[in-house]
Image (cartoon, rainbow, N blue to C red):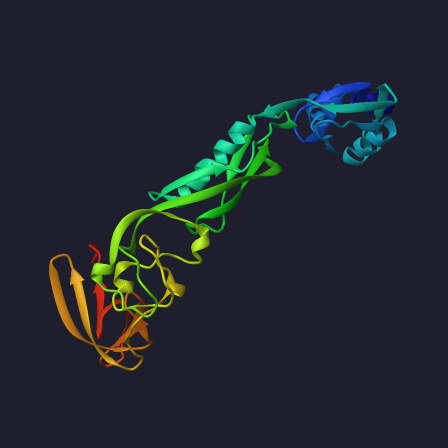
Length: 310
C-alpha cells in the first residue's frame, strides 16, 4: 500500500534530446514531457525554473542528472523517474527587431526633448536589425533620455529592448541635432569695444551650432553690452563675445515692477546679487521677510511677471 501511494505521488519526466524554447528563462515543461497522477503536481513541475535560456546564435546543454537534482530539491519526498534522453540541447527561437523601428523609437524620444523648437535630426549611421529571443509577448521598446537639456550637437540615445517583461539589451542610437531659432544677430559689422544698441541687432532665423560655445543671448541681455572682439553681420552673440553692463549690484535698493496681464504694480526691493541685463536674480522685499526672483530689465529695475494662476 505504501509503495502504491509513493507511485501515485511520483513524477515521470521524459527528457527530449533537442528543443527550441521561447523567452529568456527555461522551465521544465519546455524541455520534457511530465506525467503523473497528481495533476496539480504535474503543472507545478512543468513550471519549475531551470535557469537562463541561451542567447540567439548559441545553445545550452543540460544533463539529465542536473535536471533530476533540481526536481528533487523542489519536490522533496516525491519519487522522480527520468526517462528519454540523457541530456538536452537547448536552442532559442528568435524574432527580429527592425533597425528602422529602433531608430524611430530613438528619434521620437529625442524629438520630445526639443518640444516645439525647430530641430533637424540626422542619423549618424544606419541602425542594424537586432535578433532577440522569441517571447510569449511582443517585444517592447522603451526609451528614456536622462539629461534632457535642449542642445545642438551629437546625441547617443538609449533604446531598451524588453522581452517578456525583462530587459534583454540596450541599443545606443546616434544622432546629430541641428537647432534653428529666431535669435538676435548683428545687423552689420561691429568692431571690438563698441557698445551694442537696438540698431545693431535684428531677429533672424539662425542655425544654432554647438560651435558657438554657449547659448545665444537674448536681446534684453545685449542692451548696453560692449563687444569683446570684431564680429561680422549675422553673428550670433553668446556670453563670451560681450561684456554686459552691470545694472544691479548686491545690496542696492532697486525698483521692483510686478506685472500680471495688463496690470502693473511697483515697489522697492533689495538686490541679493549682482545682475546684468536679462539676468534672473534674487531680491528681498524691503523688510527682508520674503525672497523673490525677477529679471533685470534696466538699471536699478527688476521685473517679476506673474502667470495666470493665483
